[in-house]
Image (tube, rainbow, N blue to C red; front, side, top):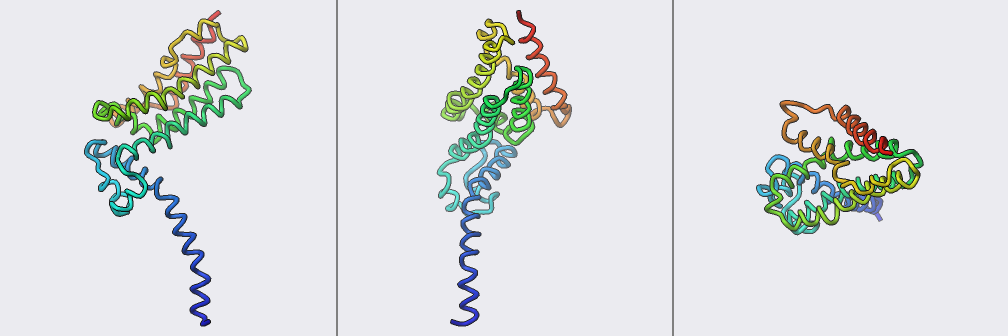
Length: 218
């Protein structure tokens, strides 16, 4: 075997490893490209071809991972919103602090990931074009938002159980407790260029508003 042959044999595993890493990273690269397409063009005007081009791959390659734009959008929701809710749930379950501390920790994650982060584009698309994607609206409501509601309901129930909150707090519509964060996400997408929102200050006011109201109940 020549020196060249030995070198080729020695480099083949490394090349294979690089190809495998590249393949494993491809779905995230496609979703990243899709976020940029959706932000600039909207969901309706984006195509698999334009997403593939932005991701630096061929149209045939993108079909190996996602068959439709809807599949990409669902994957984007699961990888951002659902993942954030799951992490916030895990955080809350493992936190031994009082209601205010745990609620603030959950909102820190929500504002960081879903309001200030790239995931706010999802909200923008759903508001602007939701009427044209009924299946995705149903998916988002029943599979994703419901998990967020369960998280907040769990926090309320925990506060009631340890005597911090009044039992009548269990009757509250939990959507009220997260509504300011949704407003902040919408504001950031619509008005931020002409009237930027101080996200950190807004988040602190959100925490204070909810916690002061709930904890003051007898």
